Picture 1 (cartoon, rainbow, N blue to C red):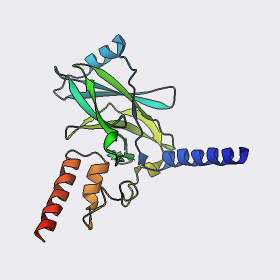
Picture 2: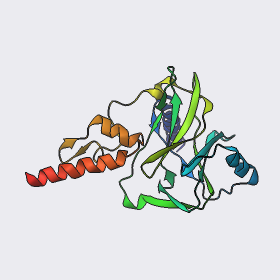
Picture 3: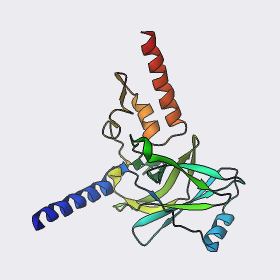
Picture 4: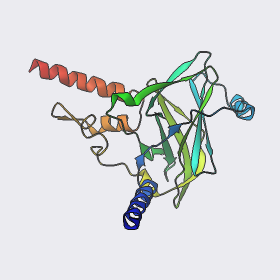
Length: 221
């Protein structure tokens, strides 16, 4: 029993190490028990007023996580999509040339019961927590939220990552082997794969249009 437990601990350590050193899937979780205090509300008030629907503030926590706070910046209630209570958000880092690059990707569920929505009241604030990575490369990091075919960014923070996290996989068949990479005996163009897994604006819309077109062509054949 102790031997099996030791193997399990070793495997978990290897998984954690891989997440730290290579580009990995984002694993944020919506905190349903979070209540914004007056200090946080004032912090959002101090941010530059913009017309965007969502405003984000990212903060490092003592538990090895980064708290990403999302505010509904409108006068109406907004519904934010989630998958298994993870919102559509990724972490990005600045490379040595000063360009923002993803260090995480999004992995979709194939279960219809995984998807839902979180209601955010006007000026309401929700919290989700993401991993704070470690490494030898000192850089800036930020968070990117995808909602309603748009993207919204947090403030930038000082961070340290392994440089390998900036290397994109050559393909994404290990993430969505059927839904993304292949359908109707056609391989999805790699640039379209990237738009989906990196939560680019209109990425899923273009993906759906692509396979709708394939379906139409197949029916004509």
